Length: 237
Ligand code: IPE
Ligand code: IPE
Ligand code: MG
Image (cartoon, rainbow, N blue to C red):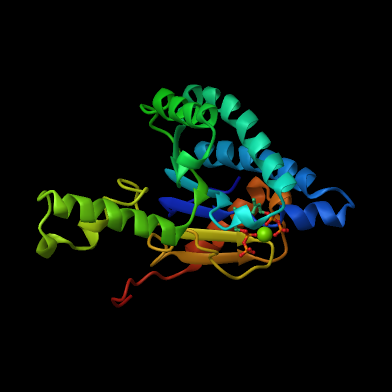
């Protein structure tokens, strides 16, 4: 492995292309999700190994409820069994966090999420963030609602609301903005993923790869592309 310098602090990945991967093989879409889950586990471990600090993966969007019920059921089934495996992450020094509205899920799923977060909370390696029933607009509306309640309760003065204060009300409170956003599969859009946090991200769209085929080498390619970019944040280079 070549030495990786100038590693982004926070990488976001839109894990797209599972369905097409399955279709290409004449398999049901759920087999694509299964292969995608396996690719994800490898990437999470690899990210931790190379010293990445934050990795957020888009697992299920607020819009994905539009899918056929049997596909949704198969994704939730995969989620359940993956949540059980997550117990092992604390041993690997990986910290787990979930973002999105989890209240819609069965209590056992919510309990597994809490357990994974609680058990790994002191890990100091990679923070692995799973976006589940997540939507960027829903997150901002939710933040606005929490903030409005604090204003009503007299805890916050409206004049004091600025970007930094508002960001505390987002699911990603305490997590730095996204530096590098990766999307495989050939779609060139955010699909409502981390729209606040990607304001100044570098985007790497990898049209030649579907998520289940995404390998540690593919991540390396994206990191190499990131290292070529000149980030100015509105200033001068
Ligand atoms: C991403 O793969 C997984 C989820 C959205 C849950 P897709 O299922 O969107 O795969 P394509 O885009 O149909 O190939
Ligand atoms: C985004 O992919 C959501 C996830 C990868 C979880 P989609 O496949 O749902 O996005 P669109 O529909 O192509 O925008
Ligand atoms: Mg898709």
